[in-house]
Image (cartoon, one colour):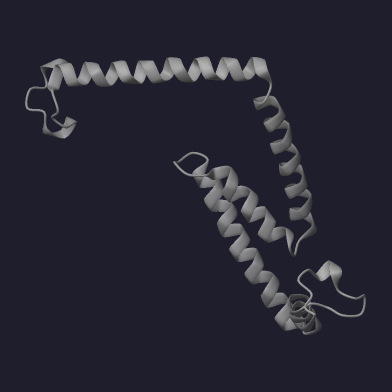
Length: 141
């Protein structure tokens, strides 16, 4: 019989991951190196998430993943992760509010129509030439 979940394990028996982590915790040098490695990886993922908040990419996912990595070893990160999860839950509830959902749908449709009109206007003015291949720039003057 195999134990798939460590919660189902008998009280005295640890899973392989827990045994590995406990063996590292016994040695102070290895424990410090492990925590430094976890901090480096978590901080890198967290910083990537913060960068993706202002550049294209899933910034929120990066932040939550970075905090999740850090929360495996640091209590302050676990607190921040719980706060982030609570904020995400509140944002989800706000997004599912019918009035706001209708407003967001109307804004999205209006933005889509406006973007389509801009594309049609560009194609009417320049045809299928890409912006960096346009010879006549009188439109911009």
